[in-house]
Structures are given as structure tokens and as C-alpha cells.
Image 1 (spheres, rainbow, N blue to C red):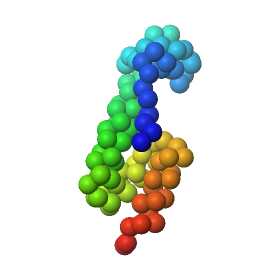
Image 2: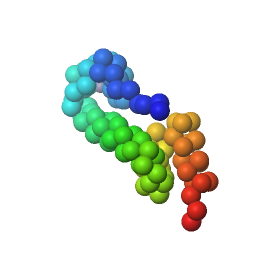
Image 3: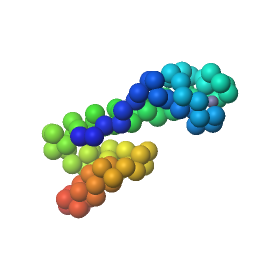
Length: 91
Ligand SMILES: [Zn+2]
């Protein structure tokens, strides 16, 4: 499964666009970027949970997690997984 990669050398501040290492505060403009770190950590946790639920056949949990992943990052893969789960779960 495709995963969101967090490259610590390529983090870009959304405010000033400075490339830098992950920190809680941007070294150039001082923006608080801790929320982005939390979001990235949550995303990775959700991906791991999605994989576990898919492997164990917990489709409803997988669908719920896929919805959250798609909300955070509407990538083609996330949308595809969510669409698949929605079309294969009997309500
Ligand atoms: Zn900045």
C-alpha cells in the first residue's frame, strides 16, 4: 500500500515555504507547525489501522478509517479504497 512519506529533510513551512527539518516552530517565520506534525502522525496511525482492519476483514472499521484518511488526504488511492469499501459493504 502506498504510504505518506514524512521526509524530515523536506518539510516545507506552509507559511513561508522554507524547507527545513521537522520542528514545532518554523525557524524562519516562527509559525507553530506542531499541528502539522500531529496531523502527519495521525495519518500514519490511520494507515496502519486501515491495513490491520483490511487484513482481518473488519470492513466497517476499515470504511470508517478510509473516510478519515480521505478527508485528511484525498489521494487517488484513498478515494479508490473508500469507494471499494462503500460498494462492498452490505448495509
Ligand atoms: Zn515559516
